[in-house]
Image 1: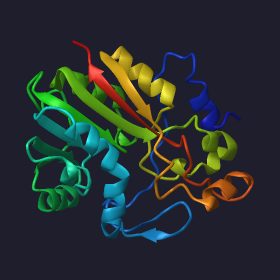
Image 2 (image 1 turned 180 degrees about the vertical axis):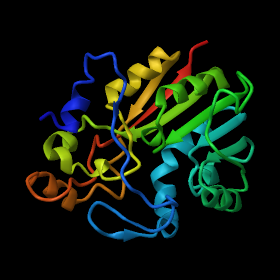
Image 3 (image 1 turned 120 degrees about the vertical axis):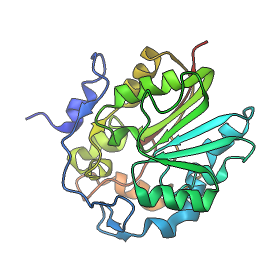
Length: 250
């Protein structure tokens, strides 16, 4: 039987952009405490400073650009919005009522409850759209990317970060790859298939990041666990997560 990771690897050379993975039972409120793949119950709100550090490289890229309308799709609790200069018009969008309330309070940004569609903003009205740990949760990720292309101005920045289901950890651990264990991950990409989708949707790739070295995840324990793929769930490791920075074609 073909594994889910084998199906993701088959995206190389295929026309498909992602593999659909059936949703599993999940907590009604995503931002409530939940168990990670190692069985540790996490209070995501208490990790705010750590999560801000994880996102700082995206905020730096946005803050280096001229002021404009910046939309953080799936803004969560606002850790990224909080780091974006208020010379920008900052807008957060999230389907969670709790998330938009906390994000507005913590960041001072305007927040909207819902999802980005082709009708959310006028065509060509946004200067940057950010989607970190978002596209894998969407039932229609291709429509989302194309909606972002419509909303962005020519030359606008589009940043998409998502698990890479062709990473070394995915290949070694297979069904025990930790990023398979979130029951709301329903659209699985590889780094290549995500970039192909973005190019096919009118974007030019500027840079690609695999955040790991210099982060809280780069530990001796992570390296040691990678040496024992027959044991337990994969660690967070280099290549497991990809962030693509792209620009809408002129």
